[in-house]
Image (cartoon, rainbow, N blue to C red; front, top):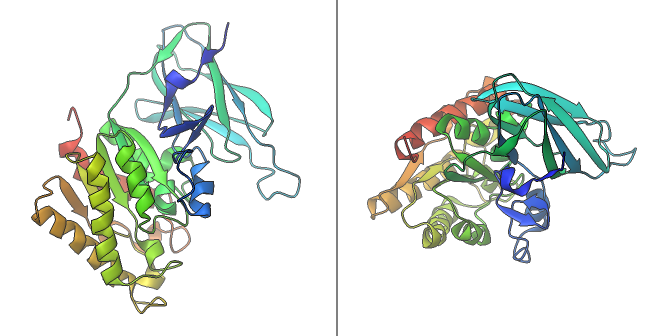
Length: 330
């Protein structure tokens, strides 16, 4: 059977750079910090979603990827494609990295609508898909949810891409999650706000701030002003979309420790929340603030900073509860 063009099946995609799903506008990267531009090349949160007719036995996916050298610490990391249906995992197939390869994922009986979470290591590029013993069609489009943040949003220390809190919350709400988390970044970069303003979306979430304690130290006054400026630029493109502002989650070393400019994360968190509440009081009635500090305890951290799977699930539950009244169709 002929390979189907993968593009109508892609979800969680912000931009395409040729055939490659990317997470920053490839025509406007000159203003981006190099570290964030590198992270934006990874297909974090990208999925292939399709409807399988009854009798379809499997789906075959073809992809291209870089092959790490023998000294690369990721050389032994295999590509794992996870299959989900109705909010539950139903299968996974792993393969060794190859310049071009295909994997076959068996489908459960009865057909239905499925999501395949694309692995992130070596940035594989989906090239095509085809049915085994049946027929496939693109899944219906869902409302788009743009989520911007740092490594926690990107999903660090979740055991699978599908377990990162944006992916989890998006499934709970029936949304097409576009993960715009950048490890090491999300320091209030205003060009990112302009990117988000140009990107179509029905709901938005900003979850950053921990990297403003370290490694890019700021003061509470700076963060307060930056949050207001970031939201102001974002509202140029999304004046009426529900916008959830999530302040930093627990970071034990930073809660009362002072950064190079003398600020604690507790003080930065309060400044961020105050900026959101002030904007809401000034007329941004669809701006919500979710305090991040109560969401996690130390046992929910894998390394003292990033959540484990249980921590990601707790953040997802809180975010989904906050956004549920505003999610289209709910």
